[in-house]
Image (cartoon, helix red, strand yellow):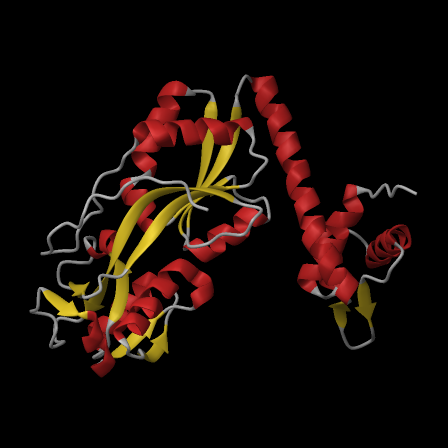
Length: 319
């Protein structure tokens, strides 16, 4: 028999899942706690399994509840998108596209693409979110983004992608570091340095490009610290004798008296930037991709301070 779930029950369940406390969840929803408990019970009867385990000491999701949470969020996201689309249609708007982008995409790709999009599709509005590639791809898979401009390698089969640019990666060091006066450094010299890196989940393709270059040199990176925030990384390398990593685009925006960028060679680590979207795109996604194609090619990546530009990249479609 087909299940007919009420959206308000999903909202109540997600509040419980996030708070893991019935009192706080009820207060957040402006409900009496008994009413919230009744809604959960009705939802569990409709689903046919226990979603929340509740004792006098703790509230937690069951394995079924954790699986249900993922899909419940997707359903609510889609319902909000449906409401937004209806209101936009009523107001004469063609729709809204949610676009994620990382720092290099914001510097090289996004602005000319949006200029073209606004010229050709003036009724499309945009929501923009700057974030590292890992969080963007998660938001894309959950339906919170329509397009992600990210560093990427092989992608999940349920995603579609187009290569936009190839970006070199550079070392970043403090002004007191022995490398600070060097124009370039062979990658293998990192074997004698302590490095600061970010968690792989933050940007898998960039992380793999750095680690892969080390493997090709036959060295192992000595990771002294893991820092996920790029600004915090700049502070760490400026105050300690460690080597950080950045895209060449970000390296051109280092503060004047802050860390300096040093080109890495033999090999030069590079990472591909891609536009990524789901296989069932909304019409606004097609409009964005058309504008992206029209605005490109985006030319050479911005070189790091004091470095020669790299080779001109070609465009290709990712597997």
